[in-house]
Length: 486
Image (cartoon, rainbow, N blue to C red; front, side):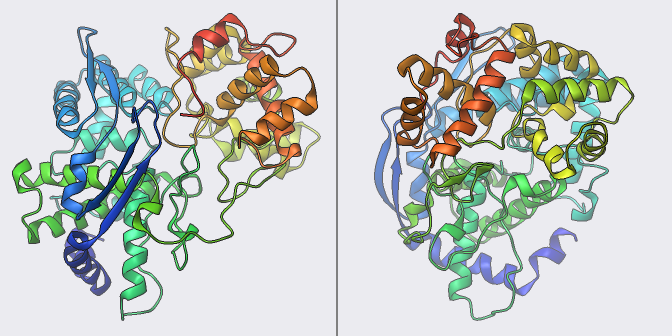
C-alpha cells in the first residue's frame, strides 16, 4: 500500500480529522518520577497538545568525533544535539564510510539509552554493508516518496528495534518519527479514544504497537477501561515495526499539513519531529489522559516469567552458561544464526522439548543480548565469559557502565543487579526473596527465586558475581550508575 492509498481510507481520514479537532482541547496530567532521564521528576497539568513540548525532558549524552560530550535535556537542547548527530550520520552514509557510520550509529544508541542493535551494526560494518543497508532503508521509509509499505518485508528489513528506529528517523529528511514504546503508546491511546467516539464501527483498521516500561508506568491502551490492546514489540516482526513507523509518519504529515501547529519550529519535517516528541512525553504513562485503568492491572508474575501487565523483572527461567555453549557448538557445526533452526537443533541434541528449547533462548532475543546477531568470533568470547565476554556481548572493547533504559529491556543483566544487591543486604534465602518481592521486582516468592537463579547464572558467567553470589569489583564498575528506584 502506498501513501495516498493509505490516507484516503475513511477510518484514517476520520482519525486525522478527530486529532485535528480534539488534540487542542485535551488536558494532560504529566507525572514523571525522578530518574536519570528526568532529574527531579515532573508534575504538570498541560492544556492542549501544542503546549506539551515545553515540558520535554530527556537527559542524555553522547560523544562527538573529538570525544567531546554533547549533553541535552530540554527540547531546544535535544534539537541541537540531534542536529549534530544527524549531520554526522548522513555525511558518513553519503560517503560510504563504514567506520564513521558505525560510530555515528553507536552514538545515536547512546543518546537514546539503548544498546540492543550494537552487535547487528558491528556485524554489518565489519562486512562492509552498513552504509548500503542504511541507504536502502532510507528509500523504503521516506514519507514523501512513492514507496510501498509492502516493500518493507522480511527480505529488506534485517532488524528493527528501539535503537534502529532512532537511526532510521535521524537519517530520514522527510520527518519520519522515532517510533519507540512511548510514541506507540500515546498514538495507541489516542486511537483508542477515537474508536470509542467514532460512529463508523467495524473492526479497528489501525494498530499501534508498543512495549512495556521498566517501571510501573502503563503503556498499553488495553490496560484502561474500554482501551484497545496494543500488540507488543516482542510479538511483532521487524517489518511490522518499520511499517508502523512509516504509517505514523504519513498521518502526522497529513495532520500538520492541515494545521499551523508548531509553525515556529520551521519546516514540515521539523514540525513532524516536534509532534513526535510531544507523543513521547504523553507515552511515559498513559494515566496522563485521565482514563481509569482496569482493576485487573497488577504486577503478579508466574514462575515462567512476567504476566501481561506486570512491572517486575522476572525472566523466563534458563541456564545461560549452558545454552550459550550449546549455541556455540551449533554455530561451529555450520548452523544458521537464527532462532527457529537453533531451537530445532537444541530439541534434537538435548533431552528437552521444543517448547523448553524455545524458552531457553530467552537471552537470545533483541530485547536481551541479541545473540543471533553475533559473529562466531564474538560468540566464542561471550561463551568464555568474564570481563572480555561481557565486552563482547555489549559490542564494545571498552566496557561502558550499564544504563537502565526507559523500557523493560536487558532483564538478564538487571536480574544480576537485583540478585547481587539482595546478597549484599540479606543473609538468608527467605530474606532475599522477601526483599525482591517487597521492592516490586517480582510478584511471588517463586518468581523471585526464578529471578535470582537467572541472576546468579548470568552474573557468575560474566564475572559480575563471585562463587558466593556477591558483587565483584567488575559488578560495581559496570552497575555504578544504576538505581532501580529511579
